[in-house]
Image 1 (cartoon, helix red, strand yellow):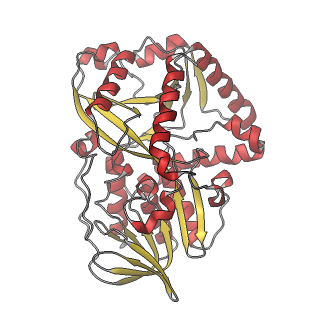
Image 2 (spheres, rainbow, N blue to C red):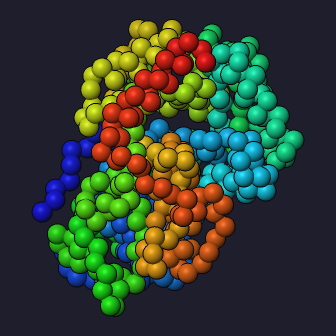
Image 3 (cartoon, rainbow, N blue to C red):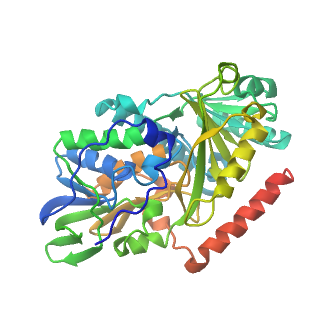
Length: 434
């Protein structure tokens, strides 16, 4: 029998401050359902809720406790974005596609807000506080200001505004940034309380969720799809796979694993700040990101600074990764030089070749959503809804997120050294200001 793996998110600020998890059983009998959902993160639970609203019986199966994966470990940034910019999308695919993608991005934030309200997840502490993108060079400041002007002119985006160097310095408390762009249609959330709240809301609505129930095999049979777990089997007419960067946990989701490059993201949280430092740093109390290729992001929660970024390599946490993160944090915020780090944790981000998430059908009985590329809190919540629509026989307009565009990673066994090579190249470019 597969056993739950150690949880690298156990030393997170979220685990330390979360409300109690809902009491959920493991599957211990054979059952039937209309739709079986593999993965109990934001995507899977959002899909289950959407199906429940349609009157379709769904069952959720997770290999570990709810919140064990990315949904319980991320930074709690709720952003309306993709890794590729909307001007790039317009240039490559046309302005109408850019408009649809822009609408999808903003719908993703609205989806989180709706789920929190409809399921009564006050503990999620969702707030549309906005996101401030901070430029690390004058060249970067000019670039994001030009992009903001394009968004306002071409897409009518009135949530975007440009901040001067002095305005960014006043809000962040950091002297290093050269300007910034504020997107007010973004938010922050307590990610572990959010996913636990989704699960609690669904169980209250009589939706079955089984944790510590890894799906080890999915077998096609005449009457439907048979999902095997160590404790029992599920027979379902349709399956939705929502395992993203953790698709390697069992052989049942092997085909999705080969479409994802798992990129480890590390996060630290300081001890509570002295009053004078707290009043100076990140006074907008929103989320903040850099313009570097190896982007760092930061926000403040309960008088602590949370600071995260890519570049923690390997299958296990390493002290060097957290030390490098703390060094980068102090470089941006010298006032934190004497503040201890109280929490350290990490998790995987699911990256795709085209830097976009994808949702749709794998075949006539299987739908999926994967590849959030660092914007997973909002996008996974929305794509869970889309996956439910596909499983119900609908055909939502998902533009460039269409399942047919998802490609397998070539030379898949070489993905780990390739990630290190690309990350090293990006770090060099950042260091020389390109």
